[in-house]
Image 1: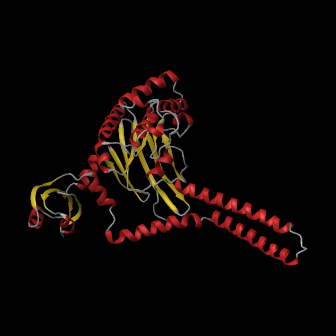
Image 2: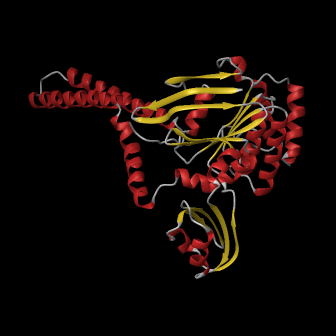
Image 3: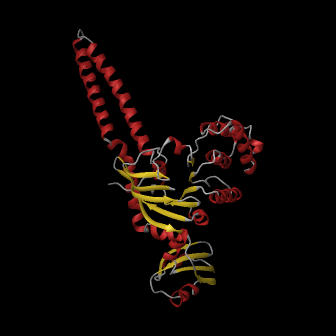
Amino acid sequence: MIKAENLRKKYSTVLAVDDVSLEVHRGRIFGLIGPNGAGKTTTIRMLLNIISPDEGKITFDGAPFSRRIQDRIGYLPEERGIYKKNKLLDTILYFASLRGVQSGAAKKGALEWLRRFDLEKYSKRKVEELSKGNQQKVQFIISILHNPDYIVLDEPFSGLDPVNQIVLKEILQELKQQGKAIIFSTHQMDSAEKLCDEICLINRGKIVLEGSLKEVKQKFGKDAVHVEYVGDGAFISALPNVKTATVYENYAELQLKSNVSSRDLLPAISSKVEIRKFEFIEPSLNSIFLDVVGVPREIEQPILAATVSLKAKTVTGDKRVRKAMFTLVIAAGAMLVLGAIALKKGDASWNLPLLFFAASLFSLFKYMRVRKTVARELQRAGEDVPHAQ
């Protein structure tokens, strides 16, 4: 079991994860879901000891993270981390060797997985010659070839066509049956709904909803309606009895306000479109997500603007960057002043101006390096740009 307790992580002025606790049991698929910038990637990186939490505790079957535990983890990051100039099979075997897999077993396993993903014919090709979807399949093979006990998948369906998504879903079910503890991180609610046993919905660094998929749906299922129709249903979301609505081309999922019956809703819809189907249903995870996380249109843009402003100011507002900039300005100013004096007197020594010129170059180099370091630290939050403190 993977257990995290009260995790907290802050980058400069950005609180990426705020008091997140979760448990991932063997033989279960745990959905870590949320919008872009929610804190999912930062949470995963803390679980994998890529970054350290400011506060909180993480254990694997009761033990803290260690090299032994690291070798029992399979991690599929959202960003691709494979060597594009190397041949496909060689790349897989190289990563398997890093996990301590014997060469013979590694090659046998690699070829079996390549056949399953219909990639065996590409085994001698360079990785860069493969499509985005095929590269994703290679990276997935690398993440599980060493038969890990804990599997962490960050947007595993990225780049996969519908056929290969089905193949991957079948494999995840098989791994679940083998007793693996699987974390499935995504913002694609339909995939999470079809695969996950439990979910944890994170928004702006905090857990806003958690539990088994059945429990979550029961909680939101009292006033959910599915309507199929012919016509333009854009008006449905503005009806007074509708709390939230996800409107598609010829059907809609609605969350009604309290104590609203079909008698209150049907006439308003049937007067404008032809209704083909009308039923009370369990809400989809997508509609629950929108209900819990959705931002009202009238405040969405100010929030987005504030987020952009925060991202723009974070690097330049860091104390280390300001200090390096101050040093650069002082050195450059001294160089200019002393240079002007030397030029005016003509016979004055140029040693000091040259010394401060060298100091200015060094300060410029240090300033650029500090900026790059701070930007990298913020980027480690991945897509996470949650609320500021």
